[in-house]
Length: 225
Ligand SMILES: Nc1ncnc2c1ncn2[C@@H]1O[C@H](COP(=O)(O)OP(=O)(O)OP(=O)(O)O)[C@@H](O)[C@H]1O
Image 1: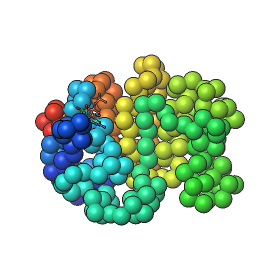
Image 2: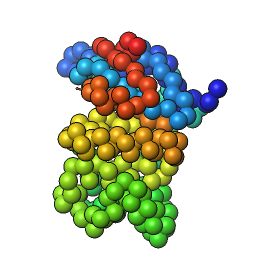
Image 3: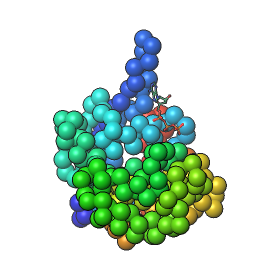
């Protein structure tokens, strides 16, 4: 059996709000094998983003276990968490989150530059990836000088330039028209197939979820199927 890249067991997470607690996850368990492409579906507020934040080691569960690459995340210190995120995980968000003061090329290369890879190697790799996702004609533009589809393809190149084991994508097509959304999803499929990057993607759109290999349905903070 292939190794699990991610294994979550009985995750609970509540947000403190005023005098009460808002339960966002009420005991979620899931397992992703290496090479998986899983869509997390469910209505607004069911806990998709909360689950993705935990799985991307951006937030901590109140209780439960989360293993990435076989390593328990819930007890890791901040230094190890930061390294895990930088080396093993890539993120794509609905609103791209490109750095506005950097060019498209610099944005794509940034994870390697932060990891102290030489500029020559980082920019070479960024150019190659940019070509792969079809943004190589806009490398000197700034994020406010590209279209939404181009921005998301640049964000995708940035998310995978360090060859992460896991790509976390929260509503990656949510602010794109259907043509550009489809193009981004096809790139997800290609990266999943060719580079073996496992993908966990939240969406409330059944057509988007259909591009994944598996679907996990959530409701009220629980996995229902
Ligand atoms: N910072 C916060 N403080 C208080 N409550 C929060 C906070 N963040 C999320 N919640 C609540 O937690 C629940 C789960 O939110 P989450 O963002 O995970 O849902 P979601 O399924 O991603 O929703 P959407 O599809 O609308 O993005 C919701 O009821 C939400 O209102």
